Image (cartoon, rainbow over all chains, first blue to last red; front, top):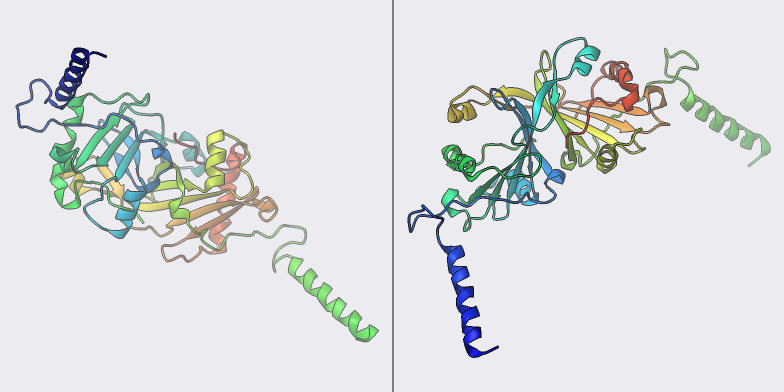
Amino acid sequence: MTRIAFLLVAVVTVAGVVASLAPASGQAVGEAAPIFVTKIPPGYRDWRLVSVAHEEGELNDIRAILGNDVAIKSYREGKLPFPEGTIIARIAWNYVPSEENNKIFGRPQSFVAGSAPAWYLQFMVKDSKKYAATGGWGFAQFDKDGKPAPEADLKKCFPCHQAIKDRDFVFTRYSP
Amino acid sequence: MTRIAFLLVAVVTVAGVVASLAPASGQAVGEAAPIFVTKIPPGYRDWRLVSVAHEEGELNDIRAILGNDVAIKSYREGKLPFPEGTIIARIAWNYVPSEENNKIFGRPQSFVAGSAPAWYLQFMVKDSKKYAATGGWGFAQFDKDGKPAPEADLKKCFPCHQAIKDRDFVFTRYSP
């Protein structure tokens, strides 16, 4: 490689690095760009249970909240803030009456997890540096095919979580 | 030992074995005595999630169904009957509205897991020989202090589970 060719490669490489560090277009200089999680954390379906919940209204789902080992340890010890590497997963299923159960029990009382709703998976990933602009948490949402939610949707996460700053921005409490 | 003394020991031993095989008092001869699980399977809170559900009415709980490794493997492979050693756990919590969540979301929509209900834990343990009289499943129920339910209550389990013999007597389906 000639000296000029080498220099050219170096300049292009540096330009690429600078470009990747630049704020997104439309972002004011000095303002932290919102960063979201775009990959589904592997193995999440094997994680241990934090708790369960039901959301009525437009969501109309029944959900399980799972945590990776770091999350579960922190929850059980009752320590806040959650340590670096904590990941909390929320899996939702459509909330459906179980005709089968109701028939056997003789009462219309049983609601179970059905098919995947529009936004099947959500995650909160703790990385205080990477996600400094949103309380140290990266937010993520995926449909049943693993497609991430548009960034505009993910920008709506933190404003609600901000209300529970004293619990390190995490809604779900551990159910023993 | 004299021959007579030896004979006496043998007879007493045989009588003991016969006594331990005899049906419980009040049980018709030839009818299998119901046997139930009286100890909480260790480590169940670390097991993986099968699914979630909500029961209305008198139960008014929200629940998680967990499975030990044998159970989860069988569920995921879609194989029936469940193998020997399968244990399925049901943890229930009182079903309570979350005032905190509702305030933040601006809508009365959120229901979460509260305190332990009267019968906090249930288990189904697969042992085809031991629990032959109840489809190969031993049933168990415990309160939050680990006290097992009276046998009269446990006798009510199998009659309902019997209705789903084609799914090896297990109500809960796996939620991916």
